[in-house]
Length: 293
Image (cartoon, rainbow, N blue to C red; front, side, top):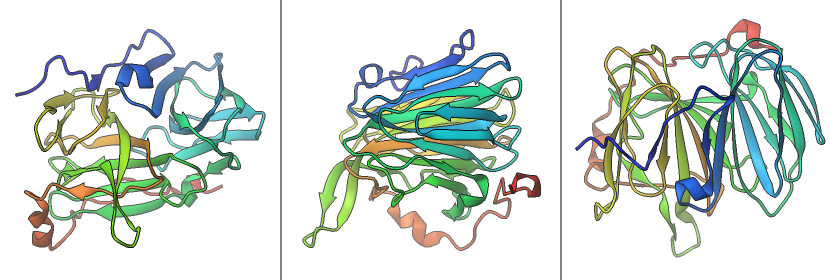
């Protein structure tokens, strides 16, 4: 059944610059907070990370960022998420900063989580982002890795995912809600909270996302449109893009480990063995020559 009043689906309010907000209190979890922000050219956005580490991802436009940890001028290089690679700024605890747009309609998001250690501020430019083509057949998708496992931070993982028209992603369904290690201490599964923030390449487009647990105490199917967000507190969380539309989502994760260790739903894991090729439409976005600085 499609959920019409889902607690896991967050809808934007475009009457304000901070058009979408998630807090641990509103999400009912421990670690992750999130804001999506759209600014006019004469506006500024001020923030302090407090006891958190933070990732700022530019969806479209360019900006100057001035902070107590440094300055970054004229960052951002794409007109929207479907035309070019991302720019991401990582900031550690107790950093005050100001975002000043250099264009009309600067669109960006910040995700943050409590941290116990400090790491150097770092700008991840488009040319530094690794592209992974994951899956196969009509479960092929593109992953842009901005703050992947192994990045010098404490908890955050940040990636972008592009799902071509009619394709599945986060598939086979997988989960990361129980920390498990093997007999030698190798991490098998992390316990992570996850945000899916969506952009669709046409305004009427949509995707479906299901969130379900083994015992079905969570089992929701949601229609997700542009600028909406899905919370994945636990359970499996597959996605499918409506035919005719490319679905983008920003994934921000935080939890027990700076990792993406996950467990597939055993009912569907066999599907991986049937994949022979990847979708020829991938990659959806690449590094344009004018993004190289």
